[in-house]
Length: 316
Image (cartoon, rainbow, N blue to C red; front, top):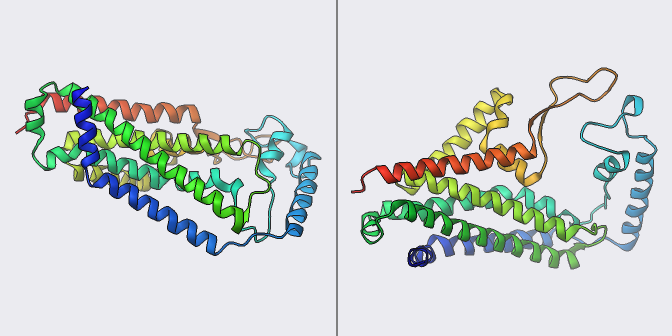
């Protein structure tokens, strides 16, 4: 507990932590302000017309008007009602900010939250190496495995708290702005449950990337090495190589994080339509369950590698 309190105090004293919080809050306030300024609440007549159009389109969907040849459901849907509820939505012309869009917006900004988690993990792990104070810490607590695991626990706590705080602030400000500059109509009954689940998924992936950045920083002995390896991997490997070999996407880190956040598998439709169907039979490159396993394997594997390297290498 003494080591844990010491690591918490060290994390709190890092200037990067309040900078991330303040910078994130400022970005949220500015983005919500710009969106609210350019948004206008729809009239009641517009809302009524949108509701009428939705009901007509939904009934047309239930009658099978939107299905392909033979009336077959596209892959991934168990019933016609499920298909229609997923694909027929309310369209409000010039609606501005809509609370029903919040879960999708949270998924859209997940990349920034995840990168902040990686930045925090790299900084909290690499600071002692950069300032040459790691030998001082190991003089006080020589058990290296305990040092790294305690530091990992602090990274989990800090990244989870900050990511949830930023997302909760975004949701609260967006909801307040939508009250006067948009609409809260047509929000599903499960809206707040969907928002909470989206926040938890984004925070979980951000925490995972924080632990990965921590492990790389402990191996490379600096914050810069961790961020450099992650950026190089995301740009050169996932961004370039995956474009030439789509089949490799089922093993990639960032793709796994995206699937966990969106809960949507990565499908490959290059196989062409199946016999008697107008819809291609997709090849599932990465399912949601596989993405959970892949992300967990990256985290555990790099943590173990970081522990082995940190335990065996001399610190001077």
